[in-house]
Length: 188
Image 1: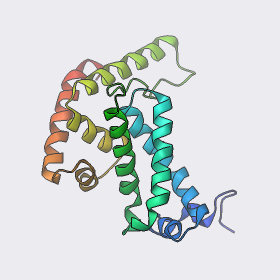
Image 2 (image 1 turned 30 degrees about the vertical axis):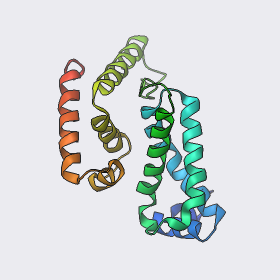
Image 3 (image 1 turned 30 degrees about the horizontal axis):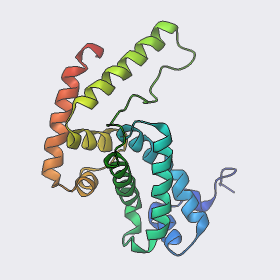
Image 4 (image 1 turned 180 degrees about the horizontal axis):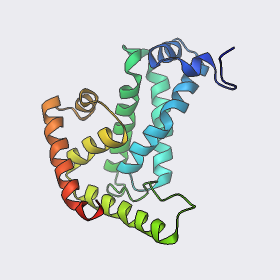
């Protein structure tokens, strides 16, 4: 028996299988998707929204919408980008409803707790500098950067989500990266 304790075959299955079973109404399969993608969706929403309460609400609303719209998912293997599109739309809707502007100050990239106080302070300052640099980017550049660097999305997934051609995504990412490199030069 090779199975790790507490890890089901469904947990190890690829997205196509898990999403396919969820589409068929398997609540356990949908729960696997929730566990698999909540951290990424939360990280993405956190960089779009200002308040952690809004982030949790947006992620929860996204999963409710996903559950209701699962029959519309024509390619189960693309469930990741489909979920990211839903959370993106929900986050943008929340912003349009008059919520605070994009703020990514809540990034969880601090030094390990066993680090020295100067290292912890340095890590916080670096995160603050990156947050400031990202806030200065135009919205499309920031969204592409977050989807690629934080969400790990492929260029075609980003293009689909943002609604622009892949060539435009490449340009937006190149400009965003160049700006961030210049702004973060002192942290190299």
